[in-house]
Length: 465
Ligand SMILES: *[C@@H]1O[C@H](CO)[C@@H](O)[C@H](O)[C@H]1NC(C)=O
Ligand SMILES: *[C@@H]1O[C@H](CO)[C@@H](O)[C@H](O)[C@H]1NC(C)=O
Ligand SMILES: *[C@@H]1O[C@H](CO)[C@@H](O)[C@H](O)[C@H]1NC(C)=O
Image (spheres, rainbow, N blue to C red):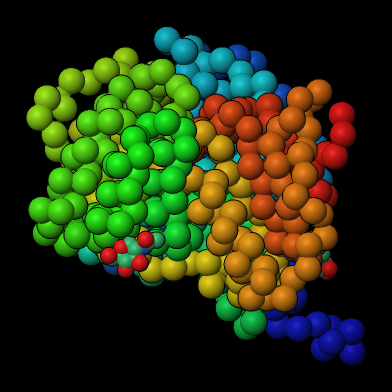
């Protein structure tokens, strides 16, 4: 009895849920178990997918896909992955093009040799409602969605998801993502920490964000120098792009529907010189890589230019695969209020001005709360260039009074340099990934897996091969 009294409310809640889980977990999650995805090779791990209703009244439901770890899932952490946009799908981009176990190829699925489920149980969430297979029964739910609503919904999702999968309660939990998830991930982590003060539910062990939007001006204004130093724009245009109209000013005007004539002039010149035959998400790549790469309307809107209607992209394998009836059936997915699954939502009306809200301060509060943070950056991306992220991390380390614990140095993947890294106070890490695009696990899967493994293990990146 005295021992029981010693237990905190939270612990007893977890213990109660765990006890219940023995009875109910198999029943609750069994309906979501995927028998086999069409065209899928034989594998030894389990997959689940389906819906978690986050709002009964408005019938708002979020779709998830869980790929359990290839081996010993019980001893491996749970990792949530979120893509950005806002409005792009973690299922289509994250799971089926970046770090999931399979990639669609024609009518079949092929194994991804560098899938992150080698190291963790990977949970992909299509969020907010209106993205991918996630839905609300009334389209008004898609209007005025913002960071605050999304973070809250993501928190409720996880709480309810744990009821379906109580075997994952109190499992080491990491949140990862890229691009606009530089907003989603820290904002969700912050809510978890607040929630934990009352009910210790989330065993949050770290966050990792790739080419993340963390601070509007610094992130977006690093684009000019990136273009210029990679030879994409001329000296005079670089000057215009930094003094007459910088990119944050353009975006700011663009999102408010009033682009000044100066910004129109500058951005048009930038557009002419960089040309539309360059992938802004990887300046070294030939066009066209799948449309999956265009993860953003907000992060990198393309001002309409004369003759810009030609689509140089090939048809996308993921779009084809996820729109097959048999695939949707196997995934327990439904299309509600829309006829087609799309990479990025065309029904969601997201508050675009939220992109201007800084999240670097939230990242700072996480570090202060003892949550390890990794900011990584594909070094060929001009959308959220490494230089902006590096500046922000360094500035944060200074503000928090964190000393360098790993000096700026190369790290290795195999026998080659995987990128550069620096760590502050053992909790705040920065790393570049050499030769990687905005979507690091898509473009450098082997290096991304080395990075992921070190992050989960709380270790600095390999210093030698
Ligand atoms: C949750 O996990 C932590 C270690 O990560 C452990 O100290 C704690 O006792 C666990 N709580 C419960 C209720 O299992
Ligand atoms: C949405 O769900 C609510 C609550 O169940 C219901 O009252 C409403 O009629 C539904 N709307 C549509 C368009 O189905
Ligand atoms: C970008 O432009 C805005 C508005 O003109 C200005 O306030 C800001 O200092 C500029 N930023 C940089 C990095 O040049």
